[in-house]
Amino acid sequence: MADEWDVQALLQDVEHYTATGTFRADYELDSVMVNGRRFAGANQCRLSQPPRFQLEPDGAILPCSGCSRSIGHLEDGYATVAQQAAVLSDEEQLVRDCAGCPARDRCSKCAMLPDFLSREQYCEIQRNYHIQDYFQIIHIIKALKMSTQALKDVTFQDLKISSRSVTHYLPNSMESTEASSVSEHVYLLTVSGSPLIYQGTTRKMLKINEATAIILESMIKGVDSETLKMFFAERFQVSAEEAGQFIRQAKESLRQAGLAKMSVAV
Image 1 (cartoon, rainbow, N blue to C red):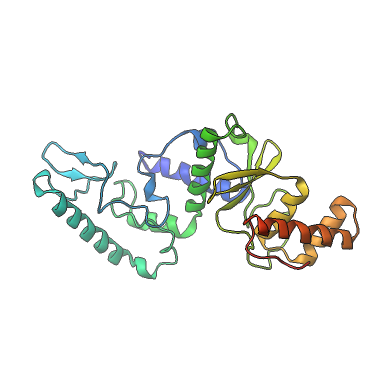
Image 2 (cartoon, helix red, strand yellow; image 1 turned 60 degrees about the horizontal axis):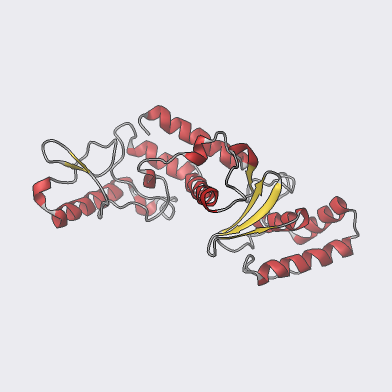
């Protein structure tokens, strides 16, 4: 990001993804953001152990692009520079009151912001946008595009991501009344109309049918069993008893596969 207009473009991408579970352009999946750790999530900042830095003609060390704030001088030595960087980070967190911020558990707490982005703007972004979720799914899709045939040639138009706030198999208006019962790092992707489960811990993908996608999406969203049963029965023109039996079996299979936290009675 080179200026405030790039920040606004990023936030528009994040807003679009959060509202629709889709992307606006191919560059979101094909490009790499320099110093993206600023927005990548908790514990992503490497300021105290910089893997790289920019050296100014006068010997000043700048750890992050776009930021003119120095963390030391070339003659200081690595240990001294690292200590100074840690002190700067701690001081910045005190000024921002990071300990009392609702975004503290998901924010990278970047202390070396680019000159065009104020700490007030940065904190507002971290508090009010689901930017970590956006970057997490972008990272997953990029990795899958490089490693799997299923996503190798997909474009942004071919992808849909299900989440607690956006569903593609259930009506978005269906109410969330329970906590999600899907295991952490399990994602429901729709690629060119076909539903796929991706499990981040094992890095495995599983192709599923629409019925299983509906059930998994209901578990992600936290839809109560009775509402799901009635929707399922109407969608597939089966009795409530048959729908309940299928849902129980599918949920148990998901649990046994490590994709669901627990078996839920229907």
